[in-house]
Image (cartoon, rainbow, N blue to C red):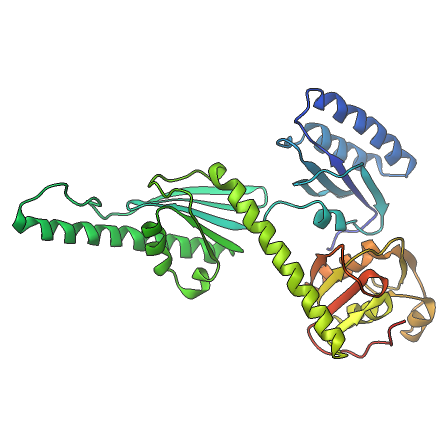
Length: 361
């Protein structure tokens, strides 16, 4: 959030599941370049975008690509779960971030542990970065004897059980280390019911409460990440839907009791953002609404009179769908996109602390 504008924000269809994908991409870039030049984009920015769009890591299947750049270089480049219906281009003093939410960015950081009696294969995925490692415990043997004399069966079973426990503890310890290092939103554990349960039972509460157990690997083999990608994506979507429903419930609950922990509409949200008390900015349809900006890039107001009361003169006009998410993220607030949000101006904010806001219009 420290980069200086103007920002060039581009969202394209980068699908590679058609036979003439390369030709379509080249034609799209020629058209996009024309619009960039007409829009006054810096030549260095255009060159950086061309390199990323035409020569960057290709998408897999039906995906979109988001690129945000300034004269300093490429600030963001990532694939999107869903491609836009048409190319989106903004050249502005603020980055255009909402399509990242609309089109579905990759799942957040997660840890996947595919476990068995001997150890685990662990994958940590953070955006485009992937870390894989193998954990093999020191416990041996891990299989109970198929046949043994009456006197030795109990001893061998005890040895086997202790070997499995040793391996489980080694896997759990490594999961905890990686979870503390990377802060995954979800820890997926797959394997047989027994193996999964043994590992999860060894995890401390701070990690165990983030665990999602997957049935994959129930036949005893360690599954690869690609085998459970669909299950991971389904879980991610379920969490997003549940979070959206919870936020809507909170908005209506705060609104119903006239709470000062809710700001509704552009006027109130601008006040809340200037206070620095926004916890979650909830955005529906802002249409083409604009706000005024003051001396600071995140000083936003609905009109010149409000800025005058703050002792500032208007420094610019900005689209609400660009500057308000930018201001919220600059505060460390969450930004949530809900297309079915029925509130004044299509925007609301849940606050950390009560703040006096002007009456809703």
